[in-house]
Image (tube, rainbow over all chains, first blue to last red; front, side):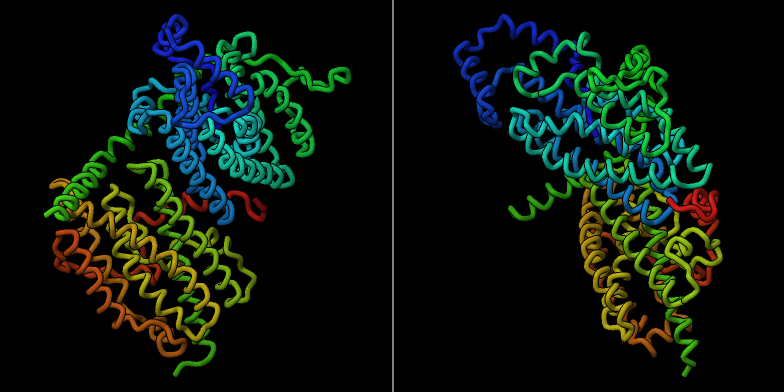
Length: 335
Length: 256
């Protein structure tokens, strides 16, 4: 799964960035850092790095991790009802992978000096964000196919370039994540293929899912380049390699022929192939909806957060017990 | 001595019971997904549930072969009604808190690992093969669950009291594991299957040790529970399979 983190900063971050621009971070160190980045050297955890670089990465990686964790909910919603044992097993393996991605992304972020407890606290307090896509509901089984096909497809577009991110621990985590994501994308497409070649009801289910997931998937690439405030710096740092609009275009170009193969209609009247540019032209995203969902007013924002908080709160006694037991064990060994 | 057909029928019933146990505990475990106290526990729970679904598929596929009527793993999982399911009642009980889940796991898997270990020596080759694989998986689950059982029992006062109640609540369900019927006897006598009397003694020892490690006490057996293997379930079960089967059954004859 994927995060739109790049383009969202907290107000606190903005203040810090403003301070940095006037700070006395050694100009020579900055220049040397930039030179390393441009030479495609990997920056490692113990290397010197600008504070703003560190903060950008912490924000992006932790938002990515949070997206994996919250992303388990819409898919988990169909685990108990999956229509065959094979599909149940595949979906469960996918949801498990997402927990695993969350785990190693949190670990990658921890190399930058922020604790997992702090990141989790930021998610639960609403301070940290996660990808807007997971605030949409999974209403039918076909939504599981659409998520794999479209949402993981969009994630791959975004994440493959992140395997070359200048920050070593993140780049390495992404190599592993991407391998699993491509499996996820394939299983999603396979579900859609079965449905689109199935009964009339199954076909209708597949079309309905595409109708509902298409536009939110395009929103996953974040604001358009003209409105994306932090892209330039991230590009200069080689955290980001392509702009939001470039990646979105690439996604549309790859995905539309797949929809055609499935015999499904992409819900966009303005969609057409342009011979001159050799790209698809497509309609305008509903940016109001995008901003509403990001602001916490999507169909499921409250439910997703409430569920995560409840699980965390209900687990408090378990974490306390584990801590108490570990302490007792340490005391027993010391005695 | 029963006829060959009787023996085969017993083997089929036994394999189906194993499949039902695996599927029903998996279904309760996947209900817990996204509700765990820690990310590491999300991974463990999902991973173990996945093992159980894998086992259910192996048992059901084998049952289909034994029965030889063309039924697939999905036919067994999605097309049978409640009275045809023969899992232990413990496994279908609704999820409570994490301590309940751990106690269920400890009680059942302490039994199941012994059952599988015995089945690795069964004269039925296919069943023995499946048991070899499943035994490794379940031994690992049990180690994980046992560690949590001890942590909760010997953790805080609150966790100790809470897990003691879980143990008290679930204890009676374990009697069902050892209530041998004709199917179990045929398995023992004709397929070198487990002797439940032997398993019960070992289980008592293993569980007593764990309970002591967790600073807990063994509950008194207040009542015996039985019926799962005869398809006599608790009221919860109808809801469990209704949820599990509804999509599959709503679209007869299609593929997914």
